[in-house]
Length: 186
Image (cartoon, rainbow, N blue to C red; front, side, top):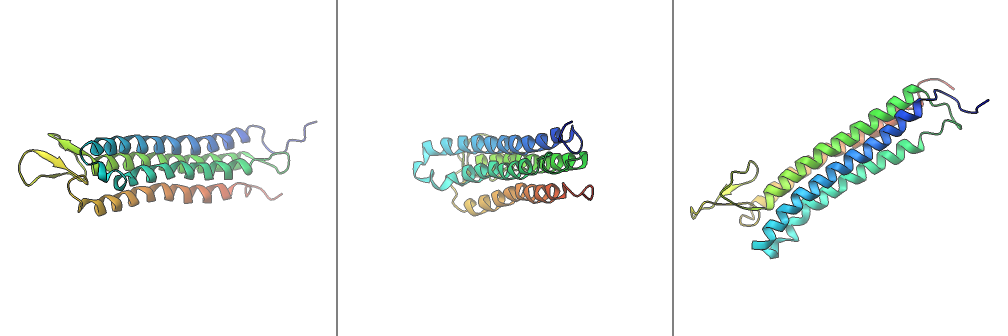
């Protein structure tokens, strides 16, 4: 006889939630880092003295992976069916926790990447949606932080609000994972 208590398929959903939290958050972090890193590299060719100032989006994107790691650790420590009964409700709670954190991290990473790229890039003859203003000298150069320092504060505010999306996912993920174990009175 097995010493397993609870539903035998429930840990599958719990571990899937832990994997989803880490994978999707890291995908968002990777996209945000790559996209904003390309903008920093593009700007660094023309204005190398602004590279360190413009690295902020890359750092903010990297934090997203940590959110997924936190939820994955919380979920994985909550799955021990031999010590405590683990039912489908618990597995679903952990799955939803991981998906909430992971997908919020993915969407925040995409927002940070796009804003970070457009906010620091030095662009010629392209229409960018975010943070681009036309040069006053009329030579069709569009500029962001590389040429217009006043945009830096606005870019940082937009990045903070994008990072808050992932933080919301982390908070909801913690709340959902805390619901696991409350399905039945043991």
